[in-house]
Image 1 (spheres, rainbow, N blue to C red):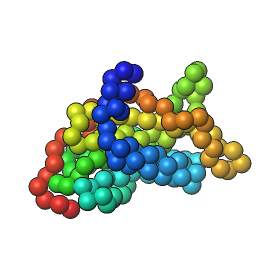
Image 2 (image 1 turned 120 degrees about the vertical axis):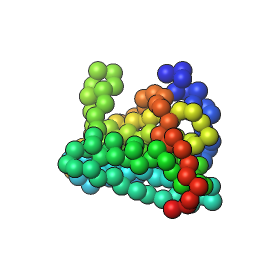
Image 3 (image 1 turned 45 degrees about the vertical axis):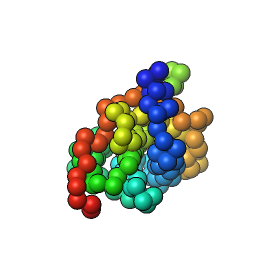
Image 4 (image 1 turned 60 degrees about the horizontal axis):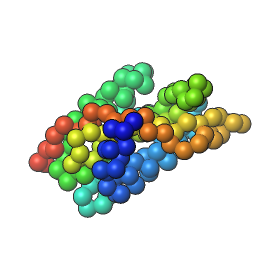
Length: 150
């Protein structure tokens, strides 16, 4: 986990804000359907604006997450950070629970960080369990920046 803490420490406050905005939105989306939500990305731009993109690829959640990763390999110039969020399961202290996952990458850094927020469904509503958990450091989501803004 030391490596994950290192990349976390290197992230700017604006990237952390983007990550937590994506995490909050992912939890909100998890409450819409017990079958999971469509994976999405929030892109932070240098002018402070944000853009949301959803990724649908077939009927499989994992396939949609892969499509999101592929789409985020190259981002428009002016992008400073991106997130990729999806719904799934995690095991923490021997207990398997539903969780939302958000991977965040600040363009200037060599790695991304992955966070999970565990939750339970109670009376049709989502209740978070504890604080978000750093799952680890991952390869960067973004591999290149294009010169054309989209």
